[in-house]
Length: 248
Length: 316
Image (cartoon, rainbow over all chains, first blue to last red; front, side, top):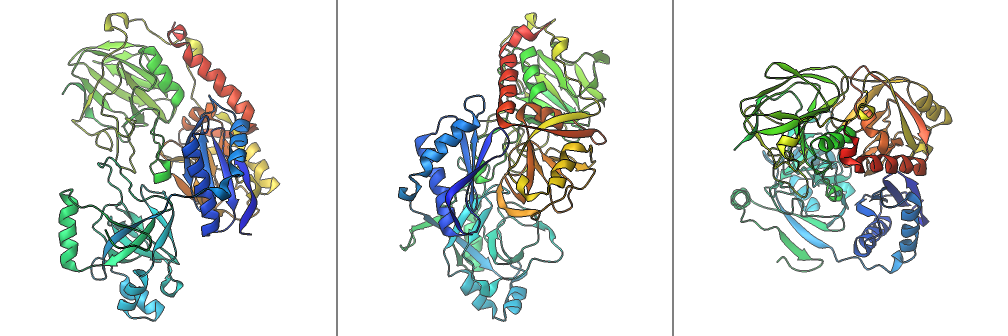
């Protein structure tokens, strides 16, 4: 269990190699996944077209017209030997201003009663952690976050909603996250952010990446309206800070 | 704006090219054509760049009105199409004039067909591709399906229109997408999650394409594939052609419109050279799988690419 001594490589068809670094969801394993991705990106491994990180696995896509599976494998094994020395680029911490409860978070009271806590305690626990972004995907910009306190873990809804508004912040089991686009969903909704995590009209449609951190900051209804307005007019810039630092 | 005006959109008509790569790590699906073989051949017929975009239609017939003189080629699954009421041949360049009506009336075989156009459908590229990403609301016509009265701009032909007449793909290269197909697969990445019996089931029994299939994937019905170590894994990447087997044991072949990650075990992946043949099975058709190796699959793909490189030499 845990981190493998050596990565395990498998085929995923004739245009992707799967490199697995462990068999658990954990920071050490995910660190290795991202270190491999960073080394490939910086060294531009021959024939590799892109990488896709997840919890413990890195998908390495290649062009089979240029290189064989064996050649990619050889390149990856060469990189693997130096992964322990790789210094990952420092995480950016993104602040997601969130209006908790009420219309925006219709399940906040259910989460509180499930946890045996007051609504304010739930908000305080949820917003007191810097969540690690393991990876993004599924839908564009969807964040797979780690680090939520098990004190506020709540099972999914028995009947998922057919329409969850974009920006909804939710809890499912011990996971938490934000719906970047409107979609169906069964997470318990505790709040909403007006910030657009995914915007196809932006030059950079997805801002937050694997390895970054995310912090939810409670805000008032008035501030929600104000930020909403700035997001719509394109004036809003996401607040970031360097780890352990002050909001910029 | 001139080009092709949409009179009737059909049900799942989109602008597609070979796909948007480099953004899967952010959750953006590559999208792109379901049938890359027909698409590439259509562009060869018109003398286009291989990356020129085309109109993809899935099992439901659009009608387009031509508003600029250009040339089109109908390729992919066999359709009955008419230009100004006259039946139009497939796999050949057809010069069209403003006011001409292109009506696709019947899908006889296959799942997807294409209207390729000289110079390509010239919607602006987004992140390097003109493909419509329906989930990501990006590319094509404002990120969505082709709608009534939308106009598809067309590019400048690379081959002069007066030389288009008679450009026709050699009959040896015209695929037949009717009925049953056997496609080659590379086992993995999670074949170890299945029993030997489960792997045998995949490789020996026929599967029928379900009505619930779309651009994301072909849902298959047939014998249940037996898991040995459970059906769920931590969410990880998905490649085109991946055969996911959820808990119910019925496989799903993921196609161009797939999501970027998923948490179901994948028993095998269809070889790139055969993905278009899998994607062209329509609801009710039969699909069978046979195993091949990753190097064999690459050899076949290199051969096919060498064929595409012959370009105009493939024309009759």
